[in-house]
Amino acid sequence: MNPYSELPSSAFWKTGVTQDNPYAINNIYKKKFDIKPNTQIATAGSCFGQHVGNHLKRNGYKVIDEEIAPLGLPDELHQKYGFSLYSARYGNIYTVRQLMQLAQEVAGERKPENYIWEKNGKYFDALRPAVEPDGHETEQEVIEHRDFHIEKVKDVFTKMDLFIFTLGLTEMWVHKQCGTVYPTAPGTICGEFDEDIYEFKNATFGEIINDFKLFQATVRKIRSNKPFQMILTVSPVPLTATASGKHVLVSTVHSKSILRAVAGQLSAKQKRIDYFPSFEIVNNPRLHSTTFKENLRSVRDETVQMVMKHFSREHPPIQRDKKVLKNLKNNTNSLEDVQCEEALLEAFGK
Amino acid sequence: MKKILVFGNSHVGSLKAGFNNLDKKYLENISFDFVAISGKYFQKIYINNNQLNFPEKTVKRFSGVFGNIHFPIDLDQYDYCVLVGAEIRSPIKTLIPSERKFTFYSKNLIENYINNFYLENTRHKDLIYKLKKLFISKFIIIPAPLSVLPFQNKSEVASIPKTKFVAKQINLIRTICDNLSKEKNKVSILLPPEKLLENNQLNTMQDYARGAVKWDAIEHDRNNDLIHMNAEYGREIMLSLIDKLN
Image 1 (cartoon, helix red, strand yellow):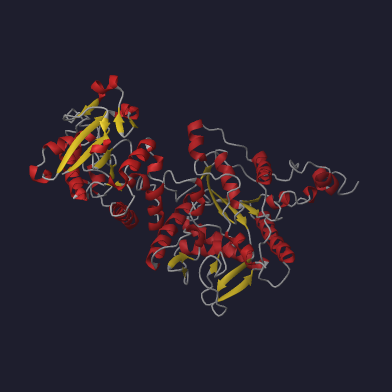
Image 2 (cartoon, rainbow over the protein chains, first blue to last red):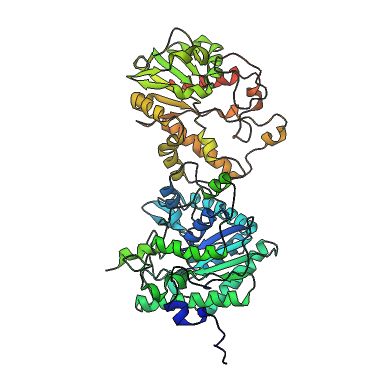
Protein backbone atom coordinates (compact mmCIF):
# COMPACT_ATOMS: atom_id res chain seq x y z
CA MET A 1 0.00 0.00 0.00
CA ASN A 2 1.33 3.44 -0.91
CA PRO A 3 -0.27 6.82 -1.73
CA TYR A 4 -0.35 6.00 -5.44
CA SER A 5 -1.80 2.54 -5.34
CA GLU A 6 -5.45 3.58 -5.14
CA LEU A 7 -5.22 6.45 -7.57
CA PRO A 8 -7.30 6.48 -10.78
CA SER A 9 -5.80 5.89 -14.21
CA SER A 10 -5.95 9.62 -14.91
CA ALA A 11 -3.29 10.15 -12.24
CA PHE A 12 -0.68 8.24 -14.20
CA TRP A 13 1.00 9.45 -17.38
CA LYS A 14 0.93 6.01 -18.99
CA THR A 15 -2.78 5.43 -18.54
CA GLY A 16 -3.90 9.04 -18.47
CA VAL A 17 -1.96 10.25 -21.50
CA THR A 18 -0.05 7.57 -23.41
CA GLN A 19 -2.88 5.04 -23.45
CA ASP A 20 -5.95 7.27 -23.18
CA ASN A 21 -7.89 8.56 -26.14
CA PRO A 22 -6.55 12.08 -26.65
CA TYR A 23 -9.83 13.12 -28.28
CA ALA A 24 -11.85 12.17 -25.22
CA ILE A 25 -9.55 12.23 -22.22
CA ASN A 26 -11.09 10.78 -19.11
CA ASN A 27 -11.42 13.03 -16.08
CA ILE A 28 -9.37 15.85 -17.54
CA TYR A 29 -12.05 18.34 -16.59
CA LYS A 30 -14.43 18.14 -13.66
CA LYS A 31 -16.67 21.13 -13.36
CA LYS A 32 -16.75 23.06 -10.13
CA PHE A 33 -20.27 24.35 -10.71
CA ASP A 34 -23.15 24.03 -13.16
CA ILE A 35 -23.94 26.52 -15.87
CA LYS A 36 -27.71 26.81 -15.67
CA PRO A 37 -29.97 27.51 -18.67
CA ASN A 38 -30.59 31.04 -17.43
CA THR A 39 -27.01 31.82 -16.49
CA GLN A 40 -25.96 35.03 -18.20
CA ILE A 41 -22.51 34.39 -19.58
CA ALA A 42 -19.96 37.04 -20.51
CA THR A 43 -16.85 36.17 -22.49
CA ALA A 44 -13.56 37.97 -23.01
CA GLY A 45 -9.90 37.27 -23.51
CA SER A 46 -7.34 36.20 -26.04
CA CYS A 47 -8.48 35.14 -29.52
CA PHE A 48 -8.93 31.49 -28.58
CA GLY A 49 -11.66 32.70 -26.22
CA GLN A 50 -13.84 33.48 -29.24
CA HIS A 51 -14.23 29.74 -29.79
CA VAL A 52 -15.58 29.30 -26.29
CA GLY A 53 -18.25 31.96 -26.78
CA ASN A 54 -19.26 30.54 -30.17
CA HIS A 55 -19.53 27.05 -28.74
CA LEU A 56 -21.72 28.20 -25.89
CA LYS A 57 -24.06 30.09 -28.24
CA ARG A 58 -24.36 27.08 -30.52
CA ASN A 59 -25.23 24.92 -27.55
CA GLY A 60 -28.07 27.02 -26.29
CA TYR A 61 -26.33 28.96 -23.53
CA LYS A 62 -27.19 32.57 -22.89
CA VAL A 63 -24.14 34.52 -23.93
CA ILE A 64 -24.47 38.25 -23.40
CA ASP A 65 -24.01 40.47 -26.45
CA GLU A 66 -24.37 44.13 -25.58
CA GLU A 67 -23.12 45.56 -28.86
CA ILE A 68 -24.96 43.82 -31.66
CA ALA A 69 -24.20 44.04 -35.37
CA PRO A 70 -26.66 45.72 -37.73
CA LEU A 71 -29.33 43.34 -38.97
CA GLY A 72 -28.11 41.57 -42.08
CA LEU A 73 -24.45 42.51 -41.84
CA PRO A 74 -22.56 39.54 -43.37
CA ASP A 75 -20.71 37.25 -40.97
CA GLU A 76 -17.27 38.20 -42.24
CA LEU A 77 -18.00 41.81 -41.43
CA HIS A 78 -19.13 40.92 -37.92
CA GLN A 79 -15.59 39.88 -37.29
CA LYS A 80 -14.06 42.77 -39.17
CA TYR A 81 -15.92 45.23 -36.98
CA GLY A 82 -15.53 43.29 -33.77
CA PHE A 83 -19.13 42.11 -33.46
CA SER A 84 -20.19 38.71 -32.10
CA LEU A 85 -16.69 37.91 -30.88
CA TYR A 86 -17.26 38.64 -27.22
CA SER A 87 -19.96 40.11 -25.01
CA ALA A 88 -19.03 43.64 -26.06
CA ARG A 89 -16.81 45.11 -28.74
CA TYR A 90 -13.62 45.18 -26.69
CA GLY A 91 -11.77 43.00 -29.19
CA ASN A 92 -9.16 40.64 -27.84
CA ILE A 93 -8.03 41.25 -24.29
CA TYR A 94 -4.69 39.49 -24.18
CA THR A 95 -3.44 40.44 -20.75
CA VAL A 96 -4.96 40.57 -17.28
CA ARG A 97 -3.66 44.11 -16.86
CA GLN A 98 -5.65 45.18 -19.93
CA LEU A 99 -8.74 43.55 -18.42
CA MET A 100 -8.10 45.20 -15.07
CA GLN A 101 -7.68 48.64 -16.67
CA LEU A 102 -10.91 48.16 -18.62
CA ALA A 103 -12.78 47.39 -15.40
CA GLN A 104 -11.27 50.44 -13.72
CA GLU A 105 -12.38 52.58 -16.63
CA VAL A 106 -15.91 51.17 -16.37
CA ALA A 107 -15.91 51.91 -12.65
CA GLY A 108 -14.82 55.48 -13.34
CA GLU A 109 -11.57 54.91 -11.51
CA ARG A 110 -9.39 55.33 -14.54
CA LYS A 111 -9.48 57.68 -17.49
CA PRO A 112 -7.33 56.21 -20.23
CA GLU A 113 -4.75 58.50 -21.71
CA ASN A 114 -2.97 58.33 -25.03
CA TYR A 115 -5.43 55.92 -26.50
CA ILE A 116 -6.18 57.70 -29.76
CA TRP A 117 -3.76 56.70 -32.45
CA GLU A 118 -3.66 58.05 -35.98
CA LYS A 119 -2.90 56.37 -39.27
CA ASN A 120 -3.30 57.92 -42.74
CA GLY A 121 -5.56 60.64 -41.41
CA LYS A 122 -7.89 58.23 -39.61
CA TYR A 123 -8.17 57.85 -35.86
CA PHE A 124 -8.24 54.61 -33.91
CA ASP A 125 -9.09 53.54 -30.38
CA ALA A 126 -5.72 52.05 -29.50
CA LEU A 127 -7.32 49.99 -26.74
CA ARG A 128 -9.35 48.05 -29.34
CA PRO A 129 -7.84 49.04 -32.69
CA ALA A 130 -9.24 46.13 -34.66
CA VAL A 131 -12.93 46.85 -34.10
CA GLU A 132 -12.93 49.80 -36.50
CA PRO A 133 -10.54 48.64 -39.19
CA ASP A 134 -10.92 51.80 -41.26
CA GLY A 135 -10.70 54.11 -38.28
CA HIS A 136 -12.80 57.11 -37.36
CA GLU A 137 -12.77 60.47 -39.08
CA THR A 138 -12.12 62.54 -35.98
CA GLU A 139 -10.62 62.13 -32.55
CA GLN A 140 -13.96 63.20 -31.12
CA GLU A 141 -15.65 60.28 -32.83
CA VAL A 142 -13.18 57.90 -31.15
CA ILE A 143 -13.97 59.45 -27.77
CA GLU A 144 -17.74 59.18 -28.26
CA HIS A 145 -17.54 55.58 -29.40
CA ARG A 146 -15.34 54.68 -26.45
CA ASP A 147 -17.79 56.37 -24.07
CA PHE A 148 -20.62 54.29 -25.51
CA HIS A 149 -18.54 51.13 -25.40
CA ILE A 150 -17.68 51.65 -21.75
CA GLU A 151 -21.40 52.05 -20.92
CA LYS A 152 -22.02 48.72 -22.62
CA VAL A 153 -19.14 46.97 -20.85
CA LYS A 154 -20.67 48.19 -17.61
CA ASP A 155 -23.93 46.50 -18.64
CA VAL A 156 -21.98 43.30 -19.34
CA PHE A 157 -20.28 43.35 -15.96
CA THR A 158 -23.54 44.14 -14.22
CA LYS A 159 -25.66 41.50 -15.96
CA MET A 160 -23.26 38.58 -16.01
CA ASP A 161 -23.54 35.59 -13.69
CA LEU A 162 -20.52 33.88 -15.18
CA PHE A 163 -17.42 35.43 -16.74
CA ILE A 164 -15.32 33.24 -19.01
CA PHE A 165 -11.85 34.64 -19.58
CA THR A 166 -9.06 33.23 -21.73
CA LEU A 167 -5.61 34.26 -20.60
CA GLY A 168 -3.42 34.91 -23.63
CA LEU A 169 -0.20 36.82 -23.09
CA THR A 170 2.15 38.12 -20.44
CA GLU A 171 4.05 40.35 -22.87
CA MET A 172 2.58 43.77 -23.42
CA TRP A 173 3.29 47.30 -24.58
CA VAL A 174 2.75 50.03 -22.04
CA HIS A 175 2.64 53.80 -22.13
CA LYS A 176 5.57 54.77 -19.90
CA GLN A 177 3.95 57.79 -18.32
CA CYS A 178 0.37 56.72 -17.68
CA GLY A 179 0.74 52.95 -17.61
CA THR A 180 -1.95 52.32 -20.23
CA VAL A 181 -1.60 48.83 -21.66
CA TYR A 182 -2.33 48.28 -25.36
CA PRO A 183 -3.51 45.06 -27.00
CA THR A 184 -1.13 45.61 -29.92
CA ALA A 185 2.30 47.12 -30.22
CA PRO A 186 2.29 50.74 -31.42
CA GLY A 187 2.91 50.82 -35.16
CA THR A 188 1.46 47.40 -36.00
CA ILE A 189 -2.19 48.19 -36.76
CA CYS A 190 -1.94 51.93 -36.21
CA GLY A 191 0.05 54.48 -34.23
CA GLU A 192 3.78 54.84 -34.32
CA PHE A 193 6.38 53.29 -32.09
CA ASP A 194 8.51 55.67 -30.06
CA GLU A 195 10.77 54.14 -27.44
CA ASP A 196 10.65 57.32 -25.39
CA ILE A 197 6.89 56.94 -25.02
CA TYR A 198 6.25 53.20 -24.98
CA GLU A 199 7.98 50.36 -23.24
CA PHE A 200 7.84 46.61 -23.32
CA LYS A 201 6.72 44.77 -20.23
CA ASN A 202 6.57 41.09 -19.44
CA ALA A 203 4.25 40.56 -16.48
CA THR A 204 5.35 38.29 -13.65
CA PHE A 205 3.21 35.74 -11.84
CA GLY A 206 2.78 38.05 -8.85
CA GLU A 207 1.83 41.04 -10.98
CA ILE A 208 -0.81 39.06 -12.85
CA ILE A 209 -2.31 37.72 -9.64
CA ASN A 210 -2.45 41.26 -8.24
CA ASP A 211 -4.00 42.62 -11.44
CA PHE A 212 -6.56 39.85 -11.41
CA LYS A 213 -7.56 40.49 -7.82
CA LEU A 214 -7.84 44.18 -8.57
CA PHE A 215 -10.07 43.30 -11.52
CA GLN A 216 -12.29 41.21 -9.27
CA ALA A 217 -12.49 43.92 -6.62
CA THR A 218 -13.36 46.54 -9.24
CA VAL A 219 -16.08 44.42 -10.83
CA ARG A 220 -17.50 43.66 -7.41
CA LYS A 221 -17.80 47.40 -6.84
CA ILE A 222 -19.52 47.85 -10.21
CA ARG A 223 -21.92 45.06 -9.25
CA SER A 224 -22.53 46.36 -5.73
CA ASN A 225 -20.92 43.19 -4.37
CA LYS A 226 -23.22 40.80 -6.22
CA PRO A 227 -21.08 37.67 -6.62
CA PHE A 228 -20.26 36.10 -9.98
CA GLN A 229 -18.56 32.93 -11.12
CA MET A 230 -15.62 32.62 -13.47
CA ILE A 231 -14.14 30.03 -15.75
CA LEU A 232 -10.54 30.60 -16.74
CA THR A 233 -8.79 29.06 -19.70
CA VAL A 234 -5.31 29.56 -21.08
CA SER A 235 -4.96 30.06 -24.79
CA PRO A 236 -3.03 27.16 -26.28
CA VAL A 237 -1.86 29.35 -29.15
CA PRO A 238 1.89 30.06 -29.06
CA LEU A 239 3.24 33.60 -29.31
CA THR A 240 3.48 34.91 -32.85
CA ALA A 241 6.50 36.95 -31.85
CA THR A 242 8.30 37.95 -28.69
CA ALA A 243 9.92 41.24 -27.78
CA SER A 244 11.59 39.73 -24.72
CA GLY A 245 14.95 39.24 -26.44
CA LYS A 246 14.69 35.49 -25.96
CA HIS A 247 13.85 32.75 -28.40
CA VAL A 248 10.14 32.70 -29.21
CA LEU A 249 9.84 29.08 -28.05
CA VAL A 250 11.41 29.92 -24.70
CA SER A 251 9.20 33.00 -24.38
CA THR A 252 6.07 31.05 -25.27
CA VAL A 253 6.73 28.42 -22.62
CA HIS A 254 7.61 31.14 -20.11
CA SER A 255 4.39 33.11 -20.76
CA LYS A 256 2.08 30.12 -20.94
CA SER A 257 3.60 28.58 -17.81
CA ILE A 258 2.96 31.74 -15.86
CA LEU A 259 -0.58 32.08 -17.17
CA ARG A 260 -1.29 28.43 -16.45
CA ALA A 261 0.06 28.82 -12.95
CA VAL A 262 -2.03 31.95 -12.41
CA ALA A 263 -5.19 30.16 -13.55
CA GLY A 264 -4.30 27.17 -11.37
CA GLN A 265 -3.64 29.29 -8.31
CA LEU A 266 -6.82 31.33 -8.67
CA SER A 267 -9.05 28.31 -9.29
CA ALA A 268 -7.47 26.43 -6.39
CA LYS A 269 -7.95 29.29 -3.97
CA GLN A 270 -11.35 30.60 -4.98
CA LYS A 271 -14.52 28.50 -4.99
CA ARG A 272 -16.19 30.64 -7.65
CA ILE A 273 -13.37 30.23 -10.15
CA ASP A 274 -13.11 27.12 -12.31
CA TYR A 275 -10.31 26.22 -14.71
CA PHE A 276 -10.95 24.54 -18.05
CA PRO A 277 -7.80 22.86 -19.45
CA SER A 278 -8.00 23.81 -23.13
CA PHE A 279 -4.25 24.45 -23.06
CA GLU A 280 -3.50 20.90 -21.94
CA ILE A 281 -5.93 19.25 -24.37
CA VAL A 282 -4.37 21.02 -27.34
CA ASN A 283 -0.77 20.58 -26.23
CA ASN A 284 -1.16 16.93 -25.26
CA PRO A 285 2.11 15.22 -26.43
CA ARG A 286 0.02 12.23 -27.47
CA LEU A 287 -1.18 14.29 -30.42
CA HIS A 288 2.30 15.23 -31.62
CA SER A 289 1.29 18.81 -32.50
CA THR A 290 -1.33 17.63 -34.99
CA THR A 291 -3.77 19.88 -33.19
CA PHE A 292 -2.10 22.82 -34.92
CA LYS A 293 -2.18 23.89 -38.53
CA GLU A 294 0.98 23.79 -40.64
CA ASN A 295 2.35 26.92 -39.01
CA LEU A 296 2.33 25.00 -35.71
CA ARG A 297 0.58 27.95 -34.14
CA SER A 298 -3.00 28.27 -35.36
CA VAL A 299 -5.34 25.70 -33.85
CA ARG A 300 -7.22 23.50 -36.32
CA ASP A 301 -11.01 23.68 -36.46
CA GLU A 302 -11.23 20.00 -35.52
CA THR A 303 -9.06 20.73 -32.51
CA VAL A 304 -11.47 23.42 -31.36
CA GLN A 305 -14.33 20.95 -31.70
CA MET A 306 -12.37 18.35 -29.79
CA VAL A 307 -11.57 20.82 -27.01
CA MET A 308 -15.15 21.95 -26.72
CA LYS A 309 -16.38 18.35 -26.63
CA HIS A 310 -14.46 17.99 -23.39
CA PHE A 311 -16.22 21.11 -22.16
CA SER A 312 -19.62 19.73 -23.23
CA ARG A 313 -19.10 16.55 -21.24
CA GLU A 314 -19.42 18.65 -18.10
CA HIS A 315 -21.60 21.41 -19.49
CA PRO A 316 -23.92 19.66 -21.99
CA PRO A 317 -25.99 21.55 -24.55
CA ILE A 318 -29.09 23.24 -23.20
CA GLN A 319 -32.30 21.87 -24.66
CA ARG A 320 -34.26 24.79 -25.98
CA ASP A 321 -37.13 25.49 -28.26
CA LYS A 322 -35.89 25.50 -31.89
CA LYS A 323 -36.84 29.13 -32.40
CA VAL A 324 -35.02 30.24 -29.25
CA LEU A 325 -31.99 28.19 -30.24
CA LYS A 326 -31.94 29.81 -33.67
CA ASN A 327 -31.91 33.25 -32.07
CA LEU A 328 -29.14 32.27 -29.70
CA LYS A 329 -27.10 30.88 -32.56
CA ASN A 330 -27.37 34.06 -34.55
CA ASN A 331 -24.20 36.07 -34.44
CA THR A 332 -22.14 32.92 -34.08
CA ASN A 333 -19.04 32.83 -36.21
CA SER A 334 -17.96 29.75 -38.08
CA LEU A 335 -15.30 27.67 -36.40
CA GLU A 336 -12.30 29.00 -38.24
CA ASP A 337 -13.30 32.60 -37.88
CA VAL A 338 -11.35 34.08 -35.07
CA GLN A 339 -10.07 37.56 -35.11
CA CYS A 340 -6.51 37.74 -33.85
CA GLU A 341 -4.53 40.94 -34.25
CA GLU A 342 -1.55 39.41 -32.46
CA ALA A 343 -1.10 37.16 -35.52
CA LEU A 344 -0.37 40.27 -37.57
CA LEU A 345 3.07 40.33 -35.98
CA GLU A 346 4.01 37.47 -38.29
CA ALA A 347 4.23 39.99 -41.12
CA PHE A 348 7.09 41.71 -39.34
CA GLY A 349 9.23 38.57 -39.25
CA LYS A 350 12.22 38.21 -41.55
CA MET B 1 -41.98 67.35 -67.87
CA LYS B 2 -40.64 64.63 -65.62
CA LYS B 3 -42.65 61.46 -65.49
CA ILE B 4 -42.53 59.48 -62.27
CA LEU B 5 -43.78 56.02 -61.44
CA VAL B 6 -44.66 55.52 -57.78
CA PHE B 7 -45.30 51.89 -57.05
CA GLY B 8 -45.16 49.53 -54.13
CA ASN B 9 -47.40 47.80 -51.64
CA SER B 10 -50.26 49.18 -49.54
CA HIS B 11 -48.18 52.15 -48.38
CA VAL B 12 -48.62 53.68 -51.83
CA GLY B 13 -52.23 54.35 -50.76
CA SER B 14 -51.39 57.21 -48.40
CA LEU B 15 -49.10 58.80 -50.97
CA LYS B 16 -51.81 58.67 -53.61
CA ALA B 17 -54.37 60.07 -51.17
CA GLY B 18 -51.89 62.79 -50.22
CA PHE B 19 -51.16 63.52 -53.87
CA ASN B 20 -54.88 64.08 -54.46
CA ASN B 21 -54.75 66.87 -51.86
CA LEU B 22 -51.71 68.58 -53.33
CA ASP B 23 -51.93 72.08 -54.69
CA LYS B 24 -51.38 72.04 -58.46
CA LYS B 25 -48.52 74.52 -58.13
CA TYR B 26 -46.31 71.64 -57.00
CA LEU B 27 -47.05 69.67 -60.15
CA GLU B 28 -46.21 72.07 -62.94
CA ASN B 29 -43.26 70.17 -64.38
CA ILE B 30 -43.90 66.77 -63.00
CA SER B 31 -46.44 63.99 -63.46
CA PHE B 32 -47.03 60.92 -61.36
CA ASP B 33 -48.48 57.49 -61.98
CA PHE B 34 -49.37 55.39 -58.96
CA VAL B 35 -49.49 51.62 -58.75
CA ALA B 36 -50.21 49.75 -55.53
CA ILE B 37 -50.23 46.01 -54.97
CA SER B 38 -51.83 44.72 -51.84
CA GLY B 39 -49.49 43.18 -49.22
CA LYS B 40 -48.96 39.48 -49.85
CA TYR B 41 -49.61 39.80 -53.60
CA PHE B 42 -46.70 42.17 -54.01
CA GLN B 43 -44.37 39.23 -54.40
CA LYS B 44 -46.16 38.26 -57.60
CA ILE B 45 -44.94 41.37 -59.37
CA TYR B 46 -42.09 40.88 -61.81
CA ILE B 47 -40.11 42.70 -64.46
CA ASN B 48 -39.71 41.36 -67.94
CA ASN B 49 -38.46 43.24 -71.01
CA ASN B 50 -38.46 46.52 -69.11
CA GLN B 51 -42.09 46.03 -68.25
CA LEU B 52 -43.67 45.76 -64.86
CA ASN B 53 -45.93 42.71 -64.83
CA PHE B 54 -48.56 41.34 -62.52
CA PRO B 55 -50.65 38.18 -63.09
CA GLU B 56 -53.85 39.11 -64.88
CA LYS B 57 -56.23 37.17 -62.66
CA THR B 58 -55.15 39.00 -59.50
CA VAL B 59 -54.93 42.47 -61.03
CA LYS B 60 -58.55 43.38 -60.51
CA ARG B 61 -58.85 42.29 -56.92
CA PHE B 62 -55.56 43.25 -55.35
CA SER B 63 -54.03 46.09 -57.26
CA GLY B 64 -54.61 49.79 -57.35
CA VAL B 65 -53.63 51.13 -60.75
CA PHE B 66 -54.61 54.73 -60.77
CA GLY B 67 -55.28 56.65 -63.96
CA ASN B 68 -54.98 55.39 -67.47
CA ILE B 69 -52.26 52.84 -67.04
CA HIS B 70 -52.51 49.10 -66.90
CA PHE B 71 -50.30 46.05 -66.66
CA PRO B 72 -47.86 45.38 -68.18
CA ILE B 73 -46.43 48.81 -67.47
CA ASP B 74 -43.70 50.02 -69.77
CA LEU B 75 -40.95 51.30 -67.50
CA ASP B 76 -39.08 53.06 -70.28
CA GLN B 77 -41.65 55.84 -70.29
CA TYR B 78 -40.61 56.98 -66.81
CA ASP B 79 -37.80 59.28 -65.81
CA TYR B 80 -37.83 58.13 -62.23
CA CYS B 81 -39.06 55.07 -60.40
CA VAL B 82 -40.11 55.32 -56.76
CA LEU B 83 -40.54 52.10 -54.83
CA VAL B 84 -42.73 52.50 -51.75
CA GLY B 85 -42.88 50.20 -48.73
CA ALA B 86 -42.40 46.84 -50.42
CA GLU B 87 -41.42 45.35 -47.05
CA ILE B 88 -38.33 47.54 -46.97
CA ARG B 89 -37.83 48.71 -43.42
CA SER B 90 -36.45 52.14 -42.76
CA PRO B 91 -32.68 52.14 -42.19
CA ILE B 92 -33.49 53.97 -38.96
CA LYS B 93 -35.39 50.86 -37.88
CA THR B 94 -32.78 48.36 -39.05
CA LEU B 95 -29.93 50.25 -37.42
CA ILE B 96 -31.87 51.12 -34.26
CA PRO B 97 -34.26 48.23 -33.60
CA SER B 98 -35.10 49.80 -30.24
CA GLU B 99 -33.58 52.20 -27.77
CA ARG B 100 -33.17 49.35 -25.34
CA LYS B 101 -31.14 47.22 -27.73
CA PHE B 102 -29.12 49.99 -29.25
CA THR B 103 -25.59 49.85 -30.60
CA PHE B 104 -23.67 52.95 -31.57
CA TYR B 105 -22.17 52.47 -35.02
CA SER B 106 -19.41 54.47 -36.65
CA LYS B 107 -20.00 56.63 -39.70
CA ASN B 108 -17.84 54.29 -41.72
CA LEU B 109 -19.90 51.25 -40.73
CA ILE B 110 -23.26 52.93 -41.33
CA GLU B 111 -22.12 54.09 -44.78
CA ASN B 112 -20.83 50.64 -45.59
CA TYR B 113 -24.07 49.07 -44.38
CA ILE B 114 -26.46 51.39 -46.22
CA ASN B 115 -24.43 51.31 -49.44
CA ASN B 116 -23.83 47.60 -49.58
CA PHE B 117 -26.04 45.54 -47.28
CA TYR B 118 -29.21 47.35 -46.37
CA LEU B 119 -31.11 46.46 -49.54
CA GLU B 120 -29.51 43.05 -49.79
CA ASN B 121 -31.58 41.87 -46.87
CA THR B 122 -34.95 42.84 -48.19
CA ARG B 123 -37.42 40.26 -49.43
CA HIS B 124 -37.67 41.78 -52.92
CA LYS B 125 -34.00 42.29 -53.57
CA ASP B 126 -34.21 40.80 -57.08
CA LEU B 127 -36.87 43.31 -58.04
CA ILE B 128 -34.79 46.09 -56.52
CA TYR B 129 -31.73 44.89 -58.40
CA LYS B 130 -33.60 45.01 -61.73
CA LEU B 131 -35.04 48.45 -61.04
CA LYS B 132 -31.62 49.71 -60.03
CA LYS B 133 -30.20 48.41 -63.27
CA LEU B 134 -32.93 50.12 -65.30
CA PHE B 135 -33.05 53.46 -63.54
CA ILE B 136 -29.58 53.64 -61.96
CA SER B 137 -29.57 56.79 -59.79
CA LYS B 138 -33.10 57.67 -60.86
CA PHE B 139 -34.46 55.05 -58.55
CA ILE B 140 -35.77 56.21 -55.20
CA ILE B 141 -36.85 54.03 -52.32
CA ILE B 142 -39.35 55.18 -49.73
CA PRO B 143 -39.18 52.58 -46.96
CA ALA B 144 -42.23 51.59 -44.95
CA PRO B 145 -43.22 54.27 -42.44
CA LEU B 146 -41.74 54.07 -38.97
CA SER B 147 -44.40 52.47 -36.83
CA VAL B 148 -46.70 54.37 -34.50
CA LEU B 149 -46.59 53.44 -30.85
CA PRO B 150 -49.87 52.30 -29.31
CA PHE B 151 -52.15 55.24 -28.62
CA GLN B 152 -52.21 54.64 -24.88
CA ASN B 153 -48.42 55.12 -24.64
CA LYS B 154 -48.45 58.86 -25.17
CA SER B 155 -45.89 59.57 -22.46
CA GLU B 156 -43.47 57.10 -23.98
CA VAL B 157 -43.48 58.64 -27.43
CA ALA B 158 -43.08 62.16 -26.12
CA SER B 159 -39.61 61.50 -24.80
CA ILE B 160 -36.59 62.66 -26.73
CA PRO B 161 -34.04 59.98 -27.59
CA LYS B 162 -32.84 58.61 -24.30
CA THR B 163 -29.18 58.98 -25.00
CA LYS B 164 -27.10 61.36 -27.04
CA PHE B 165 -25.82 58.33 -28.92
CA VAL B 166 -29.25 57.46 -30.33
CA ALA B 167 -29.81 61.04 -31.46
CA LYS B 168 -26.40 61.18 -33.08
CA GLN B 169 -26.96 57.90 -34.89
CA ILE B 170 -30.31 59.05 -36.27
CA ASN B 171 -28.70 62.24 -37.57
CA LEU B 172 -25.91 60.26 -39.13
CA ILE B 173 -28.33 57.89 -40.88
CA ARG B 174 -30.31 60.86 -42.21
CA THR B 175 -27.19 62.61 -43.47
CA ILE B 176 -25.91 59.48 -45.19
CA CYS B 177 -29.31 58.85 -46.85
CA ASP B 178 -29.51 62.49 -47.96
CA ASN B 179 -26.08 62.28 -49.52
CA LEU B 180 -26.96 59.15 -51.51
CA SER B 181 -29.01 61.17 -53.98
CA LYS B 182 -25.96 63.32 -54.72
CA GLU B 183 -23.89 60.32 -55.70
CA LYS B 184 -23.81 58.68 -59.08
CA ASN B 185 -25.04 55.11 -59.43
CA LYS B 186 -26.58 55.09 -55.98
CA VAL B 187 -30.18 54.31 -55.14
CA SER B 188 -31.72 57.17 -53.16
CA ILE B 189 -33.50 56.51 -49.89
CA LEU B 190 -36.14 59.01 -48.89
CA LEU B 191 -36.73 59.19 -45.15
CA PRO B 192 -39.78 60.90 -43.65
CA PRO B 193 -39.24 64.53 -42.62
CA GLU B 194 -38.48 64.90 -38.93
CA LYS B 195 -41.68 66.84 -38.34
CA LEU B 196 -43.70 63.68 -39.06
CA LEU B 197 -41.99 61.84 -36.24
CA GLU B 198 -42.37 61.82 -32.50
CA ASN B 199 -39.72 63.55 -30.44
CA ASN B 200 -37.89 60.27 -30.14
CA GLN B 201 -37.41 60.35 -33.96
CA LEU B 202 -37.99 56.60 -34.03
CA ASN B 203 -41.78 56.53 -34.43
CA THR B 204 -44.27 58.27 -36.65
CA MET B 205 -46.55 60.69 -34.79
CA GLN B 206 -49.77 59.12 -33.69
CA ASP B 207 -51.92 61.63 -35.57
CA TYR B 208 -50.73 60.28 -38.91
CA ALA B 209 -52.12 56.84 -38.19
CA ARG B 210 -55.64 58.14 -37.63
CA GLY B 211 -57.77 57.52 -40.70
CA ALA B 212 -55.02 55.50 -42.38
CA VAL B 213 -55.66 54.44 -45.95
CA LYS B 214 -55.09 51.12 -47.69
CA TRP B 215 -53.57 50.34 -51.08
CA ASP B 216 -56.69 51.66 -52.83
CA ALA B 217 -56.10 55.11 -51.25
CA ILE B 218 -59.48 54.99 -49.55
CA GLU B 219 -59.82 55.61 -45.85
CA HIS B 220 -60.69 52.52 -43.89
CA ASP B 221 -61.23 51.90 -40.24
CA ARG B 222 -57.56 51.61 -39.39
CA ASN B 223 -57.40 53.33 -36.06
CA ASN B 224 -55.64 50.39 -34.54
CA ASP B 225 -53.31 49.77 -37.44
CA LEU B 226 -50.08 51.37 -36.29
CA ILE B 227 -48.32 50.61 -39.57
CA HIS B 228 -50.32 52.39 -42.26
CA MET B 229 -50.57 56.16 -42.48
CA ASN B 230 -53.18 58.64 -43.62
CA ALA B 231 -53.48 61.10 -46.50
CA GLU B 232 -51.83 63.91 -44.53
CA TYR B 233 -48.75 61.78 -44.02
CA GLY B 234 -48.78 60.88 -47.71
CA ARG B 235 -49.05 64.55 -48.64
CA GLU B 236 -45.95 65.40 -46.63
CA ILE B 237 -44.02 62.52 -48.15
CA MET B 238 -45.09 63.57 -51.65
CA LEU B 239 -43.89 67.13 -50.97
CA SER B 240 -40.61 65.76 -49.75
CA LEU B 241 -40.33 63.57 -52.85
CA ILE B 242 -41.11 66.47 -55.20
CA ASP B 243 -38.48 68.52 -53.41
CA LYS B 244 -35.95 65.75 -54.00
CA LEU B 245 -36.90 65.39 -57.66
CA ASN B 246 -36.48 69.09 -58.22
